[in-house]
Image 1 (cartoon, helix red, strand yellow):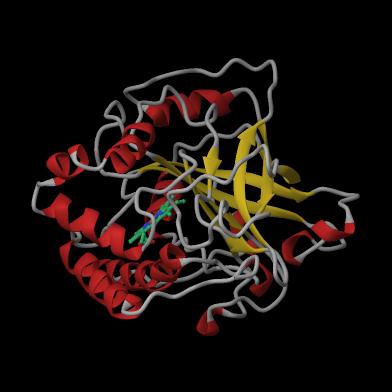
Image 2: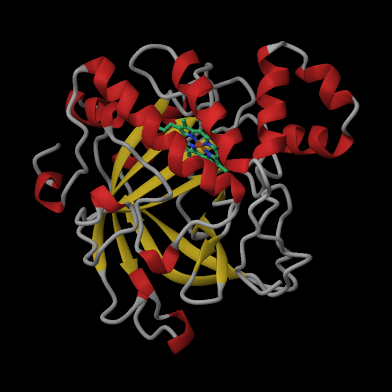
Length: 326
Ligand code: HEM
């Protein structure tokens, strides 16, 4: 096996198809299946660093270094109240990115998404394991199942946490992405250590975010971690963290979330209708591994279904619309 190489298990496509149908059918009308509860949609700048070494100048990070607008949607992984242990999502939609994108019928869109979560590994190594977990959850047998699987139980415990605010935590891709030919990376976003103390509100993360953006902007580092070993840093197992000792994260861009008021109806409406998928991207950054192959089909199916149910058009935001939303 080579670096960045995928291995598709027999029967995976059928399993993804079953999972897609089940997820589309069992969702509340007009809603996402996962990450339904938006905690805030924020405006940001996504700036590629100047002076990157040649091996880092790939796709979105190629010369000349871009400075883009971006919409970032924070969410709870479930629809539960904020003070219940959960994973939190950070989905970044970079706008105005030139170049043909991967999804055939959206190839001329100018959006490039990074979909991240507040833990470094995913609950479910691959599609088969994810499907088993979803099934146990539906039958309300998950606690017994986890008691017999200490590896998965440990991932659940580490993933489902309470948070006091949304800016003081790291966000990870958990799954790998191509970084040009024959190279794979994972993504990490981390707030720069600075002197601004963060406001906290465990029971209302939206209020904490609003308070944190009232007076100050915040700068976050966007980083990549290269796969260095096919066995210890697998492509097909999203439940394994890649060692930072073997391969430290490298900063390639900066995200500036500037001071702003996030509390308005247009923002809330866009937070509901916007569609993120890791497949909104340039081919140089193609999502890798079984969990990402499943997401290609499932995110689009759910997005189409919820827009149909709401009678809303499915449109990618553009840089031109950006300033029209307060
Ligand atoms: C097979 C595994 C997975 C399935 C079936 C799944 C399913 C979904 C679905 C159906 C949505 C809503 C899509 C939409 O209607 O726009 C979603 C959103 C999301 N997922 Fe996943 N997901 C999976 C894996 C992951 C992984 C590995 C991550 C880790 C980063 C993740 C993070 C997110 C986030 C942050 C959102 C919210 C995006 C937004 O703000 O709109 N998911 N997921």
